[in-house]
Length: 307
Ligand code: MEV
Image (cartoon, rainbow, N blue to C red):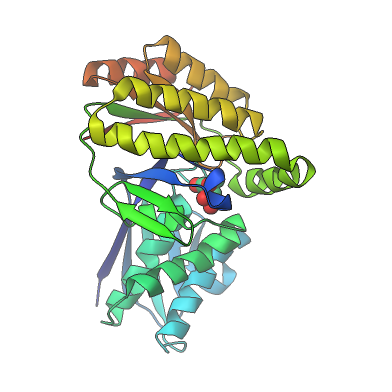
């Protein structure tokens, strides 16, 4: 029996979601404490074992069409279309919460498949194969999730142009709060596209501002400017609300975090459910905020040390 691992992790977008789809800069952080691992076993038929399905890949529900397509594209790339195996996927990243679960699963699958066949995987091929999955899952993915779920460093990212890992010197903590509601990235992205077609001037201006906030946020992270970073997070959330991609439960948890002493707070990822993030100076404050979020309905929280 041949068991091979492919791994990837979650991500949080600090600033720049949605605007990044239209070429504005964004900053995303790897969330290493939420992880996907894939093992591959030899099998006479193509099988998958994941939360959505255990059994023949052909019988899997449409919820994993993206992963199926990514597996098929990987096999075509390797010229191994007639090979069969079982992929066992285990993940601690909650699905459909804007934490990069779909991209992380695709990343781990692609890496595991190439490993199984002892083939080197170039960065370009990895990205292209993960984007096969992301395109089915989200429609028009910027590529930020595909990159960040495979990066150990924060990324400054401009779609199709810049992918710049950078180091932070920030003393602070990001608290991630899961609303417990599925996010709806695909729907939120497509509703924003319609809004942009109807009202380009307003939408473009709000997105330009988000892009500027991303630029400033990178400087904050590199110069330990926590108050300014919190302020940028608050302003970005305001813009995302005006763009119509937040919702009541996200806004409520953002307010809970602010009232519990957060330096700033915002939704993160696709929106319409999913997760929010908050910024705290100390570990103790981060815990207080996480506890307040849980008392107010957050299904789960994570604390991520910056710096
Ligand atoms: C989803 O995690 C982030 C969005 O900006 C979409 C994308 O970048 O493809 C909403």
